[in-house]
Image 1: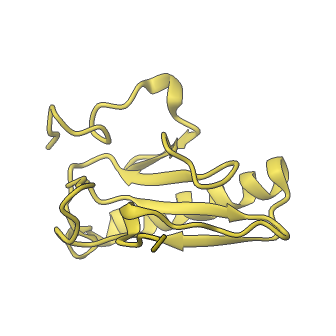
Image 2: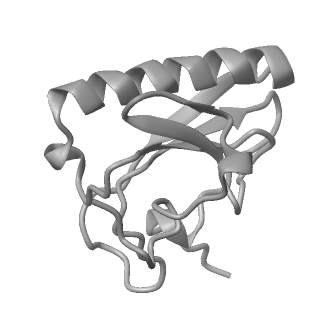
Length: 122
């Protein structure tokens, strides 16, 4: 099942970093650090808890592949790996489940933004 209005259902094939039977690794269009990517199931799924066991294993395999590729390409000090589940944000809303893998670099502060429900007080 796909949603014609969903950016994760209608990505450009040229953007695919890697793909398997159940998912794909895509570059994050608004990256928080160099190499920030997302792992998305190919089926339009709104929640981690709706992912089948085969899809979960597939996404886990892609997450590991993304980590290995990012280590080779960018040599980060570590990673921030996360996802949001449910309709918790009014501004930024994507109904297609996706996992963020955000490379972390030495002496570079990771600044989370409104996508994570975080806003800075100024």
